[in-house]
Length: 174
Image (cartoon, rainbow, N blue to C red; front, side, top):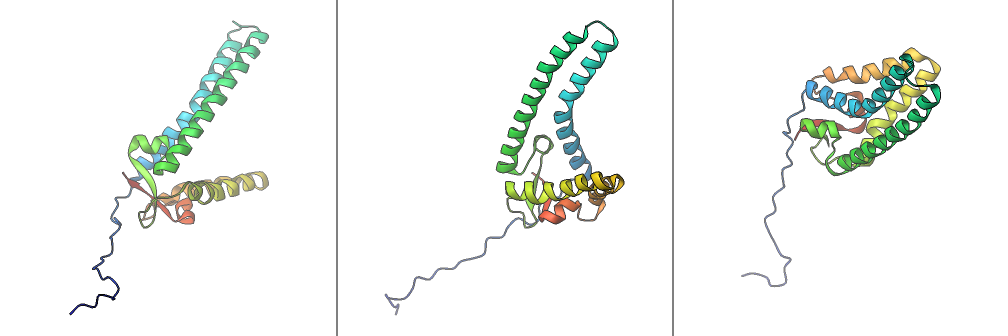
């Protein structure tokens, strides 16, 4: 006979998280990094190429080049702002930058769960960027060594860079 005053009972099984996510290849991660940097640096190279060509060919006088540079740098600044906003939105929603999105990879926590924007910015990007910047001011070769060590650590068996180890993240295929 059932007790009508007993607490309800139900069989509850643990929901298994997908811990078998496939790691992104080293080449794909490098490709995403290069795409992101090309998007950010491309407009600057176009401006610098134009200014260098215009002044070297003496086709434009200095005042014209200065005026052109002013609006070109304003456009570059606007492009940076738009790219930063788009990247922040993608990182917040999916753990992806534009390059990662194009190549079908994303940043997740080690257990496969979503990685928050604060973790990506403050644990994944800031510590080594700050350390590299400080060391470049104090002893320039050390800053470059930290940056190089971060990038080369992708050759570990788990394909995690130093910034991944600090933030408890990994990059996987979508």
